[in-house]
Amino acid sequence: MKKENMLRVFNDLNDDFIAEAAPRSLKPKESPFAWLNTRVLAGAMAVLLIALLSPLFLNRPSEPVQITRPYTSFAEKSEAEQKAGLALTCPDTWHDCTVSEYRVYTAGMLEAVYMNAENETVLTVRKAKGSDDISGDYNTYAEETVIRKDEFVITARGDNGLCHVMTWTADGYSYSVSVSAGISPEEADLLIDSIR
Amino acid sequence: MEDYQIIELYWNRDENAIAETDRKYGKYCRKIAYNILFDREDTEECTNDTYLQTWNTIPPHNPECLSTYVGKICRNLAINLYEKNTAAKRGGAESDACLEELENVLGAPSEAEEQADLHFLTDTINTFLARSDKQSRILFVQRYWYMMSVKDIARENRMSESKVKMSLLRTREKLREYLQKEGYEV
Image (cartoon, rainbow over the protein chains, first blue to last red):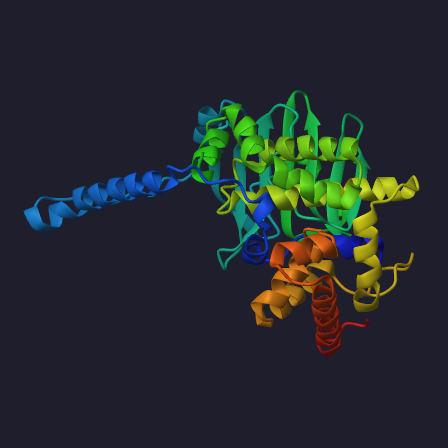
């Protein structure tokens, strides 16, 4: 096994094991008022719970509890594009999977999520202004391939000859495509041709 | 500042997020990087890149544990830099020593293709560690994830260096047996 891969094998160890083994000298010093923050937080949570549950006892109609998501979902691409302030061209279907929803993140990123019949995400396409890597994928992959197009260069990362994450920038926008099962570089090239 | 407050700064694209991350986890990241790179300049470069990658990945990520999140990013970047340095014939002392110890468990370094999918191998190692006793697991992770020296591990755990070495040797032997039973060629 290559030296670097021997080091990488351990990179994705379980978070609990890593936290458990953190040396005392490297642990951040807790604020002496941390317990106070925890108590204040616990108190705030108790008040919130009372506020949410009290309608049950006061016979008033209650609002459903909403869990805040980091993005807003849209069924229609045009609405998502309007919210995000950018236009996204991508296939309506891919490998018999359709776009199940469009998501707009607070940072102004637009994402198309493709799911299969089992409701599993098989493909995501993202677009945002700028040139940063917006894939959100910092996994370690054994292979990195460069696919050259006429106008831009794509970086494809993956394993065993398959590409899992493709990123590129063009015309002031950053793009990323993530394929859970991985695809060949040739298929990646064709897929990316359909994305703007 | 609590982790959830720092993460909120990232979500709000408040650049104080990076300053707060450095304040709370700067020493943590620098130690992880230095143990692999053994070079102060490279360590600083790696740490700064860690903050940049954290900024670029939160959102959409919403980590449950910020320390391990930045720690993994830092370690991965340090390995990438180690790879470049190795090509340029510069090495990191502690990481080189760790690799020598792991050769008998994971196989000698070679130019040939890897025998196993690294992700599956990591999963198998996680399962092995979950079944190990806590102390052995902590020493193992401190040595091969944090890349701490045997001396530092002994001091951290209030044990003798010989006891640390013996524990690591036994854990490596058990891991090797476990990997063989799981079908890996070692």
